[in-house]
Length: 215
Image 1: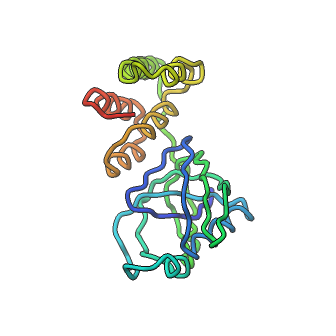
Image 2 (image 1 turned 45 degrees about the horizontal axis):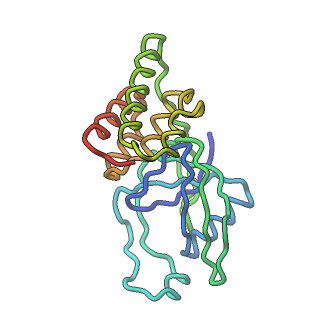
């Protein structure tokens, strides 16, 4: 069971396989970034259920850099991965990317302060038989066809969609990659992240694209 340090951010849903950039300024989360890098601890970026403690508002930038902000109850399913430090600014702020590689579910909190560290289980999609795999590939092809229509006149994107990388991508991974590229309501994104039914996720994404969602 992997451990992960949690970064709860309202409205933020990360999908596995999609690097998630973050601007980190709170002292506790700057400390978390350092620990994740030094100890090779996974960091999880997660949407939130509710606020537990409201931070003082408004604040100057100096106050924000030297005090922790609101505390949130995290959603129980999120994506996590190693942390890559991109840049450290003179005032201590950190520009990072979380290389989200896995989808996890909370099991037990091991540390509460100054930030949460949880023992987790990996959450995998349901196994599929051969007929279900064929249906997944058909849905994937429909999504690719729709994306090619939407991106008409954007040759760079179209070339990418036609590449072997996208054509050969397994359906589950493909669904997460597309979900991370479509603008949608955070609660719907969280719902798609939590489902273990790949076909349902693909069907929902195709419906969103047909309704006019942008990429």
